[in-house]
Length: 305
Image (tube, rainbow, N blue to C red; front, side, top):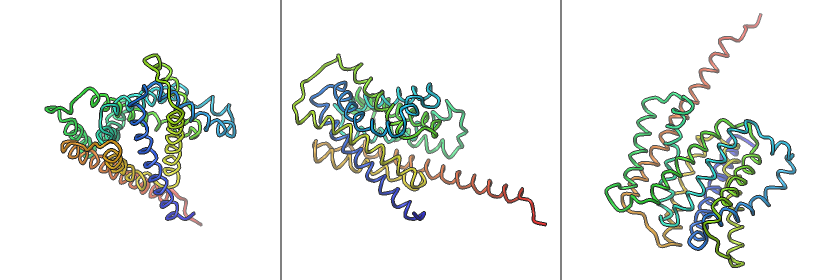
């Protein structure tokens, strides 16, 4: 596959993955209006585990059950399990587009957490982008208005935990995708079991099928996004993740009759701008680093005799 074809395939996989994530979010919001968060997590995760187990067997159970850096793996799973539980808790009360707008602030939190926890150096331009993204979150929450509610604050916490999961994932690049998805799914199942005593509603056969489909759709979305990042550079495909807010607006209006407030739209615009700016800056730094490495290699190459 040529570089151009790989990039196009990566973009297509990212677009498909984001569409599937959007469908997952719609189905999740629909189901948590009837069923408890714990129940949704248990049934969706159980269905996803059934589907992923054959891949675990093909990879080799030993490789899956004994991942590298188990402490960091456990931390990543904890962050991810809390994040998905908070998302479902938030969308019980928030319009889908509002929740997704706040979750899109994750790249801003990633920069802050990487600086605080990993000691990564952040230049002035990145801090300006972070400030713009933070301002977008504040505008979206509208602290002087009625939108600053407990569900909105839960959504902010969820987006921070999502960013923490991403930061942990940076340190686990050598872990196979099947291993990451397996443990993440298992963690969500355990989180669901912890929350299950808070309530149980007997599902109909139709809803039981939807709850199972929810887990399969989410797992497929993860696979699509992961494959996208392997086919093409992040700077090429990651901007397409912001189509999530378009789908959230469409599905939120069509399925639930929701439409975000003007403050949420303006805040969302700032958040997306900050995220794209951080992506561009990271791309430039990566290219500059490769250029310097190439020049160094040339200067140290022995001349022919």
